[in-house]
Image (cartoon, rainbow, N blue to C red; front, side, top):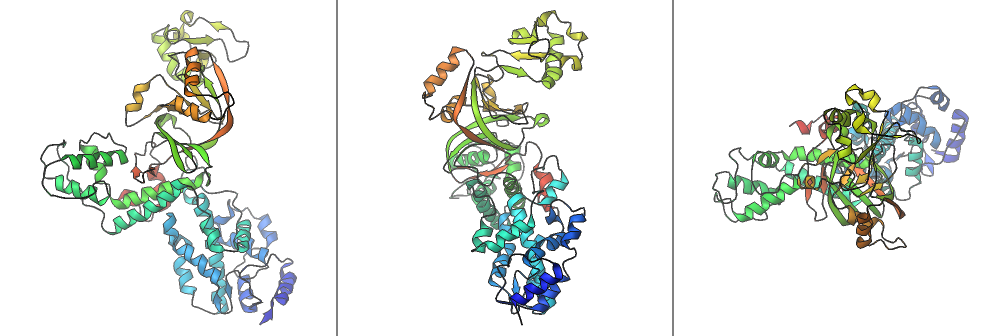
Amino acid sequence: MIRLSVVFALFLLLCGMAGPRPAAAAAEVSLPISRELLSHIKYTPEQLQTLELPRPLIASQDHCISAVYPTVGNLPIWVADDGPTERAAIALRFLQSAAEEGLRPEDYAVEEIIRLWPLRSAADLALLDTLLTYNLLLYAHDVSYGQLESRSANPKIFNDTGRQDFDPTAAMRSIIAAPDLAVHLASLPPVHRHYRALKTALQKYRTLAAAGGWQSVPSGATLHPGELDPRVPAIRIRLHITGDLETIDHSDTLYDNSLKQAVITFQKRYGLEPDGVIGNQTIAAMNIPAKRLVSQIIVNMTRWRWQAHDLGEKYVLVNIAGYNLKVVEKDEVVLEMPVIVGELENQTPIFSDLIQYIDFNPYWVITRSIASKEELPRLRQNPRYLVDRNVRLFSSWDPDAVELDSTRVNWNAISPEQMARYKLRQEPGPLNALGRMKFVFPNRFAIYMHDTPKRDLFSQSARNFSHGCIRVSDPVSLAAYALAGEKRDWTVERIKATIDSGRRKVVNLPAPLTVHLTYQTTWVDKEGSIHFNRDIYGRDTELSLALLEKNSNLNN
């Protein structure tokens, strides 16, 4: 045995540097283990600086190992002469339980680590140490920010997954410095209720899948309450398995009222029209295999890692896929409403920002794209199209542009490129496409939330009709919440009076309100019920294949 000070001096001589003492280092370290570690360090710090390294560094085990170990003096982090340390056991436990976070233990060399665990040769211990180091860092990256595979599958859609600037040396410093490693590792995933609830749901649906899930309900004619049908017992069993029907007290073929209420509950959870009528869509939803729902939960847990892990004490949460807006305060939903989101060709993006002000009786400045693609064809058919909608036409987008009479322009002679030069502005009023107010959080996507005169659309179960912005069904309640605490006391009555005045008024919020735009096809509501909604932009399958292509659950 050689004293640690001698080892440090030796590595100072060999490597020209020494780093912070690893937490696993005891009073003594075996020189044979340390020598064996050197065989796993493929590059010197100087060589790493000259290499064209992958981004992030965690994508390469050799590069990662070569970057991390010199910062700890090339000493073992997880093993001693007598084998793995207690902290190594904690690290292994988290890798083994990666499935609880929707990750795959086999992606973190768990089998190889377990094989090496009882071995005591210096070479085996050194290999074990490097495997624990790299795979725990990879786990820390994945559980915090999402796996790299999804980004490489489609950088445009999955641009936010993974951290290109992830620094394994900084991550390892935090791991080594953590007085309680288990607490530190447990803090890496998102901490908010939405992620935690999905984690609980994942365990439940894995248990259901392991037990065989449920039998398919045969297709057939549309079934209405009060009718007799031989499929009714199978439907009762199916809904009882997932808790939509609490008890099965008989097995006859009558579609009775208790089953109707269970069907309505199920339809609400699956984003279907909650009418209690069992048609093809409801049967198809009932027949989705349990293991496919497991994959859907995993995909949505992955998406939460891309956004802020701490959503804040008070925030607005817009679920694009669920057509839903919630205001959350101290982990409780205090306001909820349906919304309309972007159509497939104009998808609402995922991002977080701050609502800074509300624009009452706003103008709608029509974008160049909408003007060229939608307004011009309609003007060619009806020269009064702008006038009838109270839209003013300006000669250009310049501040000194002059107003033109849109009825005197030969729109058949105007090309889409020329149309983009005009500025079209719809005046405040009942016809305004933004309704009577908009909620502004300046961002690079030019996305905001707003009212709408088309109130009937909120009654539809599928609500992706907009050009990307979010139409809210109860803007008055949202405004009252956002302006609460403002010195002039913005009550609901005052908000309505401001709207009724017809005059434009911009009001800054007393404090900016955080807004998170998400895309969750699976979520748990405040009553604890899990929802599986439609994948309106077709993203689940692509992300699932990127993450789970070895078992392809979504295709089964």
